[in-house]
Length: 117
Image (cartoon, rainbow, N blue to C red; front, side):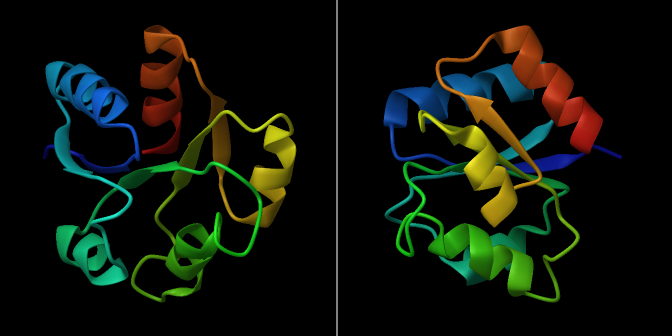
């Protein structure tokens, strides 16, 4: 069975590139811009993994990440945060299972997805 990855990213170029990489690797992908996604969208997709753009560690910056972890239908779905934040460990402590610093290496992205799916 094909594993599904929901990608939530503000930058449309990054969203397209990551989608292409994961589709090429055999994953089913549901891409969303950060401004268009809701918790209900994510629940409906029933993902095996969520790649989530987290810009900063603030109530607004991590609100979706925390909401996903608090939702009983999504609580066990791993979240890999994609971030340029200078202290990725803080994002991991706040809500993510893993943090990938941007810019990232394609092989590293695929390995992290495989490790967490």
